[in-house]
Image 1: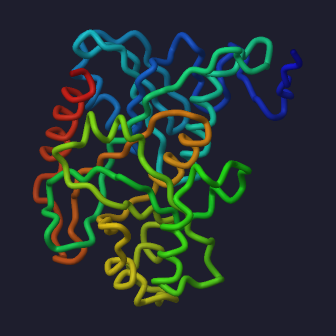
Image 2 (image 1 turned 120 degrees about the horizontal axis):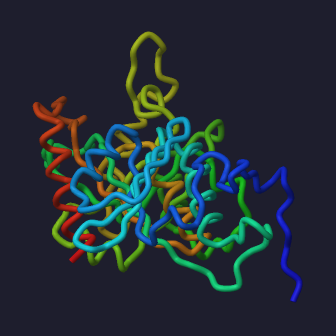
Image 3 (image 1 turned 135 degrees about the vertical axis):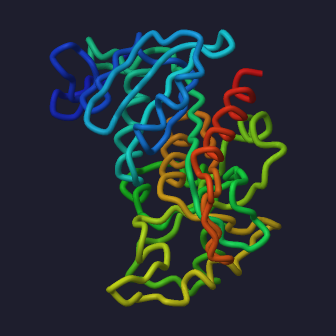
Length: 292
């Protein structure tokens, strides 16, 4: 059977045989991966491990792999934005499913559980600061998935079309896309949490309706986003990674879930008074759920 060989310019490896950006080799990666935006959050998680096997740093990408409750877990920082998620998801998948020495796909596919623990801003007044929200869906304003060819049945086209109609989405912007979380991870890890659609913006200020010294081109966008609902699902929060995590994860056949700690409520103009304590509570809760 013919197996595609990936060219040196497409599958870029370091001199030690590790994948280019993450600097990981297969022995460094657990089947369960927690991803966080901030590299400083990696040791906040791994400090709870009974044992750490590997610590690997490359640019903003820091990975600690070890054991919690006897379960092997990798924690990897992604940096901010769907562009970084594009790097991280493709490279995690390459480490798991490509023979890096032969540069061909492995005969047996490995499905990773990839869980994002992030921070986010809530869009509705009834979602309190310092609570957790699980993303049942990721709604992307970033356009990343339009660069890939995939079976559109994997995405939630009916929902994204309804959103575009509801908001009278501008043709100047990338068409919105929506992917669902892994049903198994959502059921196992988020049954007790607030759930909804997470909007993934391609910026922190203008794309999320924040106005400093530059006027907004779409000043009513947040009101339109907040008023959208589809089959009982509403857009609960804004962040900057989930749509790409879910889209790439679905196409590459990995299980993905985002759980965010709400550090701000945009509707109530509130911000967490003790974000570090709130994030630590999320970490402890999720580590316990992941290893139950």
